[in-house]
Length: 157
View 1: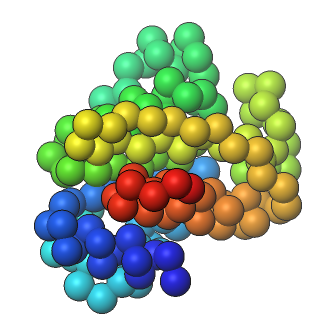
View 2: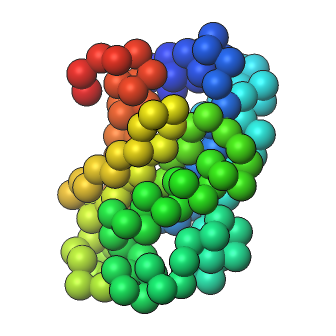
């Protein structure tokens, strides 16, 4: 499984990781925690469902949220950067978007922004997934592991 590959690679490199999750509600970190020994590189993570928790826990600027909305590339980037800075990790992954079934901030269900910040890397990718809430959440987590595998190994996604 890709989660095993990513987890083992992080441990081999001795690089730490955290996450800031909104629509995935902790599914990414729960999935990563299935890897034996991952606690050596996973100090903790954040579930920041509300705009207020994004500000309070990982220092996302309220002005950014007001200007761009929580479902945006800029907020995904700020979430990852804030989580990384708070826990002083090598890597951070963030998830924000619309699991559905209703639209949010004008975005249809399935719109997801995944931010990844790491050594010499700051990238946010927009996705449009199909399915119910759980399917969108699972596809989001899988997409993040694909991106992490790409960035950790230098492979094309």
